[in-house]
Image 1 (cartoon, helix red, strand yellow):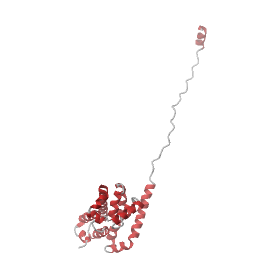
Image 2 (tube, helix red, strand yellow):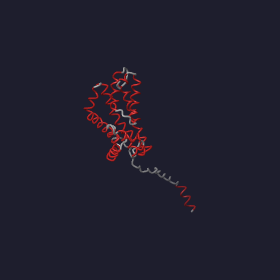
Image 3 (tube, one colour):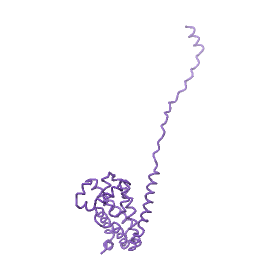
Image 4 (cartoon, rainbow, N blue to C red):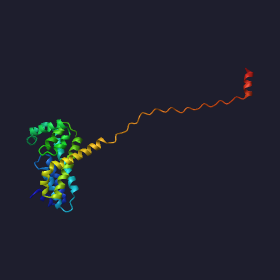
Length: 232
């Protein structure tokens, strides 16, 4: 029984939750291809009456983010010392670690985005991003950008084209994901570079208090003036 048949036979709730759970498991290194999960979920959604492809995509993206956060947390909490454990040493091989380090030295945090599209390098990339000091919010941003491209695109192709989606995706994957990735990067760059910057108001010159006009001295009564002069 294929994964698509299993997800399709148990209703839409299992379709959503099953897709979410499988993608979380993928994040800890279980050898289940992510793209195969996307395609199986999309094809199953086309067979399940009343299912929503948008809810399915949301469940898939959420599962990816949680699953990818697990190796990030392990890298942040335990560092390279975790490689002494047999399970992690088998997945995080020296060759993969070296490749991930080289990518980070050359491209920085954007490596998280690129690593999302390279099978076999995802977990080492997410693990190394933590050991090399990438902030979790930065990691989550680039991982989300990649997930929003790979997950909905593959699910939609399988939903629309069924079993032929895998062949279609295999032939045009680099072009489809590349084009969508460039568009997403451009949009992010455009939004960031054109954000409204807080205006800096020039220092205002203090306004001096209003000067009161001197009251004119009323003319003295001639009689009074004469009296004063007479007294002197």
